[in-house]
Image: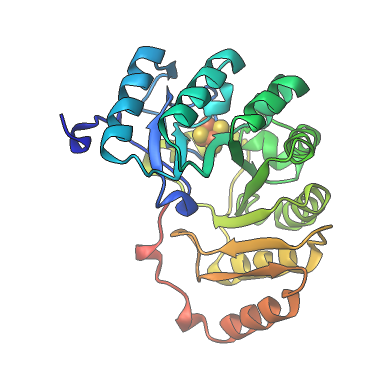
Length: 296
Ligand code: SF4
């Protein structure tokens, strides 16, 4: 058997910054799977893979890629796995890969809240170093409307807990998710929440709805949803950047496939540079990426 024969359970997702990481599926799907905007794992029922299967794949990867340095634990929220099992997986990864530098995974706020402090310490000590948390919005009305399953206070508590335990934290928010009705509240509350958290990385994506969840999103919203225009999205981005006052230098990106333009920098030090860039884009909308090439 060769590494090419490693059988993934599709669809398979990883953050853009994990493009060079080896992906190891320790779970299939998402343990929540109810966010109304998210179609990623709708075709899967959440499952935790057996240790035998996981160790078999680790053996296979270590045989063909012994120098592996970065591993991303998929699918949607590997941190949901019981700590004992995660510890066993991490120990086995450390045993098999001598050059391992980083292990990361997606995490939901409730995964982090459910783990006790000593559990997070054990995971951190074994090299689980980076967590990706979808915040989406800091506004509680919007969070409820998109059935996120977390309130702004839960999001703050969980993300601060991750930082307190020395995880590198990368957070995602979604521009346009409050529609036109909640655009002001969405951005001002999101800026407050991400400022309080001050994650190491912050990504602002654009709302994109796959056909498979569009109807559900609209019905759960419980009122007419009006999409923002590209210029309004740029205004949200600008306000977010202006209002974001982190307590550390944060690497900020709005360069996802869904974004209207690829923008990035370090905040707060490059705030003015990014604002100038957005002003320029607002005056030259022809520079924005056409809708047809934007997707999740
Ligand atoms: S956004 Fe994250 S938590 Fe929500 S359903 Fe999708 S994968 Fe699960």
